Image 1 (cartoon, rainbow, N blue to C red):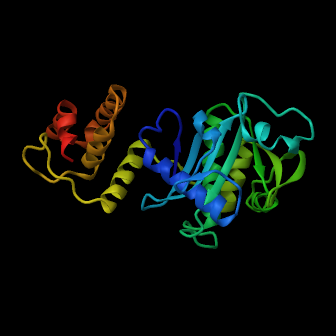
Image 2: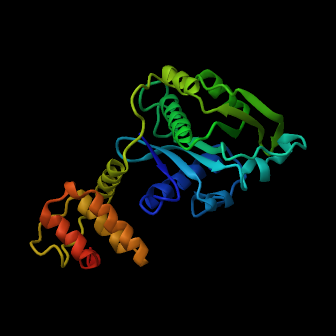
Image 3: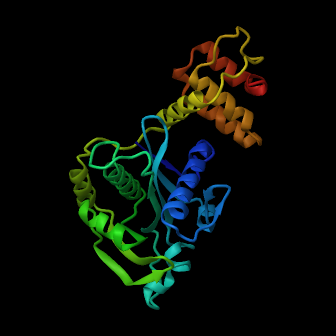
Length: 289
């Protein structure tokens, strides 16, 4: 299941992004031995500060199993500012209709072999489908990706072969890096879907993603104490508990209003009494949770 986290909704999915950065550290530093910046078990770089879109695959338990980062090429990006030697002196591609795809990785410890749903192959295809479909909706025509020869073979085998390459492959530390160009076309998406046997919508709605994250949090956290707004001392539902935690962590009035708007958008999920408690006494409701 795919969720896309960008500058508009990252305040709702901070925990998911944190897991993305942890996965990147385990894969790029731990498994692949890349020279990347890892702090407190999380891999981040300067491009993560530019509000890129993160295409994230989560499993049925809400665990992050794969991710990819999409960044506009009109500003700083890796091919222009880190891997420019690949281009052999040619200027980098810059266009509002070309995005850069980087930092793709999968959690091989949670995924199996073969081509079943919870396999590396399936999840890889799912992330690719999500990335291309999301890019299409944004008006993007092409994606450029810095990959290695192993990933190049994976793309070719999975119905997602690059349509061209930029510059020439260059040794970069322990790996060889190359720049691949892929069109965001219906034909490419159909080819990946056919390979993976994926015909359904891969995207998880924001509301369903929040419910899944709340269930995941419930499984890992003890039950919070009843609060002032919960006068009847009924156990909190999974979704109520999620909003309690979001409101408790809000640091500015803008963040409070974001939570309130989300509560309002999911109003049909709550009884009138629950909605009244969440909307009218949110800070009291969260105070002791």
